[in-house]
Image (cartoon, rainbow, N blue to C red; front, top):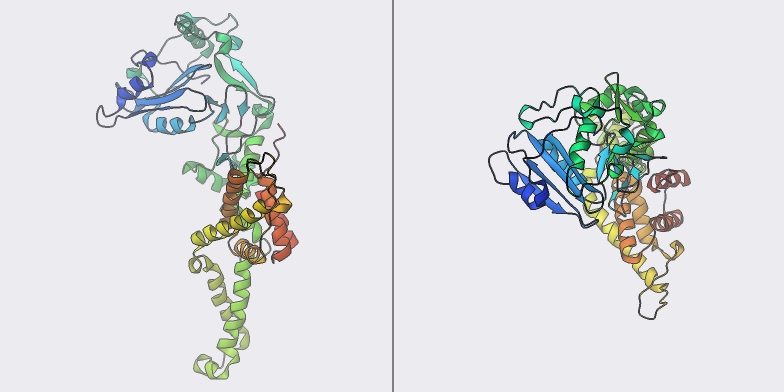
Length: 448
């Protein structure tokens, strides 16, 4: 990456293929490992291995048939993580997680797409790909640079001064290789208005946008919380993030289990879900009646100084415990699967009813959202699930969207419209609650 030193990789069999790279470290000794995988998406491959000279370091390699090869020296424990990130379209990463697929740049993935079973791809605004040729303007002097050695490499050392001199030396070595890509096609960085200084914000501003304190955010970062995006810059020793990345992070927080629970419990004094609050209110009345309104029970334990108001308070606290423990009473995992199966069963019946067999062979089904109906019982059950367990129901609805798309090619927005319509007919959620909940489910438009 720009600014980092170049290290000699000539002791690796890079030209012999991914199997040879894997073999350098796999089962070669304690603390060593290697692996390679082919990439079906583009016909390339990726591989990683522990360095044979320094087992605290490792190499990660990504090869593409058109865009060439990337070779990174990393801490050995981080190579497998990058190997996983390279599975699919990403070819290289820059600026704390911005990634390039050979055509365009995308922001770090944060908002989950239940249909694609991957993070939404959000394009970096007006991104420009920076190549080695763009950076080398003739003023860099390779004689002032050096190529580091693994045996003496210090990950904590300061970055080299006059990095362009080092890039010029790398370019000389690169052009000596057979079949080397021209420098005009060697991508080294990304430039975007999102990444300019005017768009960067620090931890205090980021925390405020996320609705948490700066100390809480710093605690998340220090613990390595994967839900917090990596910083895109460090200015004056302080981490900085583009506003666009922070906005995605805020959206992802709102769509998390905790975020959805908070949104659906807004206005409730005990921060319970609407359904759990209903359970609390019902049991508060029942407990009040059992503890105080029945004289035969009351005389067993109520002393003279315990009046109806104090008993009402005790009944409320007992009822809150019931509402807050609802997740321990109802098997939500199995309930979610049952609700999903019931909804998809109802969808299957309506899809079959409105099938448009255009080719006479059952090869095409044309279904609009208003064709996807739920029976009243299933609609009421889904409504109760959302009211009582909004976070778990969010995940279940995502599975319903994914399955409806995979089975009948129904757009995710159509699935949401059908569910929302069913709940408006047979559910008990208020219109405002439905608005709040489905706003969190609907994908945001990418304005890039």
